[in-house]
Length: 423
Ligand code: AMP
Image (cartoon, rainbow, N blue to C red; front, side):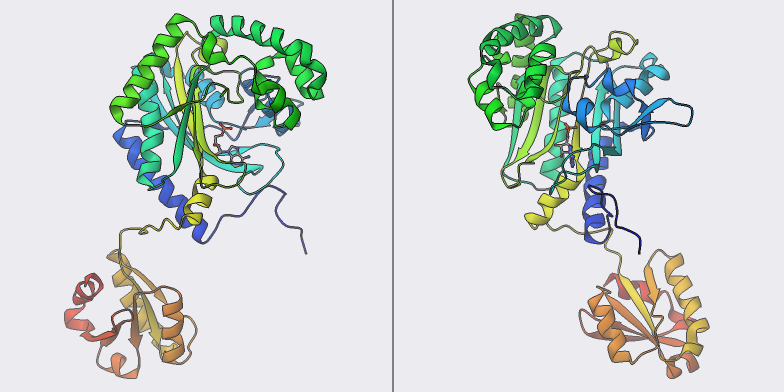
């Protein structure tokens, strides 16, 4: 017996697939309306794509990346997030030469070596958008609008949109000095990781989950109070647009998010109903300097990512049901003798060719037990083929939900089957 799937990974099947596809289909409808185009990037990148962007003192780069050497000794990393690969691709293919802003979306699996729990996995899926090439506050509001609209479409309630500004590279530098001055006398109370962060990148202390560090950081000066006039004006414009759009938000002055590339607006959408610690469904922010930092032109950009697993965990928990597919009826063909298979085949081919889902019951058991099986497996109709049907070139259709029954001459009136399916 081989062992199960690696810790933190999962097989996705059954109901989860239905939920997942539903979320994706709603997201794709929205992306079309907001004019986003799909991009697919490789599952692994050169390691520098991530450590140069996410930041080498972040949890992701320090502890969570799946990094390996290939057979030629090159360092590669399974993508832990979607923004850096999209930015790499935009620069590589000079996509910025087209009209800006460039609006892209992705639906991809991510890999992070985290401690697995419900809603926190080592392989998980994210759908995300990147709006590349505009520094306008309008586009911040538009990106947040897409995120909000997605959860509205999924009929979620009790969500909170948290928003903050972490300023630009200039004002952040000044704030970091203030934070350092505040934390340095308390250094001994910080965990070893945070003591290192204090030297290297004090903002990352806000990501720490250790209780004692959280206590120390709780009353520290917050970046929101230190952003410059331009950043404040930008932030005020964003919140003004959000108010116009009727999107409620909470300003969370100590929100920083665990990526170094963020500038100005950052945001997160959390659920009061996700009782676990992992209550964030999605989040994002501006990354105005990342493209330049990767060697591309100076192009401000913004994006977000939503976790698919957490979203459908919550949908299931809230019992948010939905109608799957396009409502076409599903029929099961039941044979009373295996010798009727050939007869059944032309019937099934006709219905399937016309776009109706139709299956054959492979086991020849009693009609009663086959109908029971059809009910259990959510079929709407059974089509019975017995000696009489074959002799008279017909079929008997039973609507197992409405308990009605029809007999059709297959030769002369087979189209009528679609009327029955549509009834
Ligand atoms: P992040 O890329 O860290 O900003 O995360 C964006 C969203 O992806 C989160 O709000 C979660 O919904 C999801 N996510 C992040 N990490 C994980 C994980 N380890 N397992 C499952 N979902 C995750």
